[in-house]
Amino acid sequence: MKKFIETIKNIWSIEDLRNRILTTLLLVLIYRVGSYIALPGIDPNRLAAFAETSSKGILGLFNMFAGGSFSRASIFALGIMPYISASIAIQLLTIAVPYFQKLQKEGESGRKKINQYTRILTVVVTAFQASAYVAYLKQQSGGAIIDAYGSFMFWLSTTVVLTAGTLFVMWLGEKITDKGIGNGTSIIIMVGILARLPESLFQEFVSRTTEGGGGLLMFLIEIAFFILITVGLILLVQGTRKIPVNYAKRIVGNKQFGGVRQFIPLKVNAAGVMPIIFAQAIMFIPATAINFATSSESASGFVRIFSDPTNGYYSLIYCILVIVFTYFYTALIFNPSQMAEEMKRNNGFIPGVKPGQATADYIGAVMDRITLPGAFFLALVGILPGLASALHINAGFASFFGGTSLLIMVGVILDTLQQIESQLLMRHYDGLMSSGRIKGRTTPANV
Image (cartoon, rainbow, N blue to C red; front, side):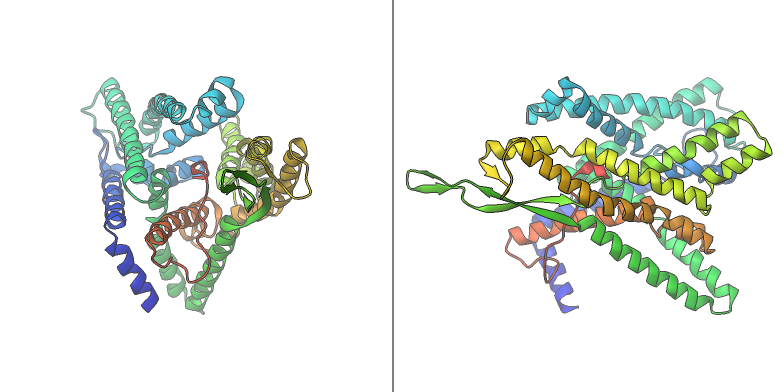
């Protein structure tokens, strides 16, 4: 405890770090306040039915990323998701399109152009999603739209406000990244998810304590498993395989360059949370399509397989999709040939491996081997909320037993703590940990 208090004092004594933390808290507070401001023309008191329908299926996933703003029909209803979608699309273009590949290699000027394209695409994606959101509001709001607003005026005002809201949230995320601490986009998503935890925890506590028959003991066991799963996720996020790299010794004048050994850290879970998000989106498609196409009894059984997380077939298909997408997304963001080329250019080599293509093949083989256990563990994490629901744990609390919610929370918190620790070590203070270093995520694309 004394060590913890001393660390807090050290953090607070560094003016730059203190200002960054306060700036982050202020911008997050602005975002949370805005998430409760209803859209013009909406009566918040009539949104009960809409909140219930928009918290299920793929809309529930959007609502989670938006911090509940989607179900509250707030000015931030679309949250940061359009920006994330645009960023992922541009990232894929940098892999597939030569023009974007060239921009990526141009350094700071290329990065600015890519950011500009990302913002333009964000506006397009947001305007499209805002129009779809208006149509969904009219169908499911249950009279929450005030009659005084005309149909066209409501569509126009809502589309403009939602687009402006998403751009403002994007701006908040960029300001947190520049002036605050941590990755702004990830922190905004994490705060929205974390805001649901106290209420879900309280509901589970009330549910267990009122049922009697050892309910309190069951609640304590659930908390113990929750902590155990969190520890496992920390190991997954921080897990790396280090490949030794030697650099040739060069003597220029009286100075020696190179001749040292370094390591390439390959992450066990390089794909982050993206495989789970992709798998969830794919699982929602068959059920949605069949609901629109038919309502027969045989079809309803098929729908249950793809919409009930407690179903065994759902878990099996979900696990396969997560494993497949883990390899797919890792292949997209990880380029062993480029790493081998840069190593060769800097006179680096892996002991016992020839430079060039042999090095690329070796790095790729190592990555494939460590991705397999990471993919299986990620698949297990993905189905844990369904298993928790099958054990009659409250649905809200069950969502924190793994899946997207807990993985994002763990990754973002570790990433933020790593930046705080770096600031402390840079100023010759002790780090946050008495032994070892906190290892956060390495790419913002992991969300």
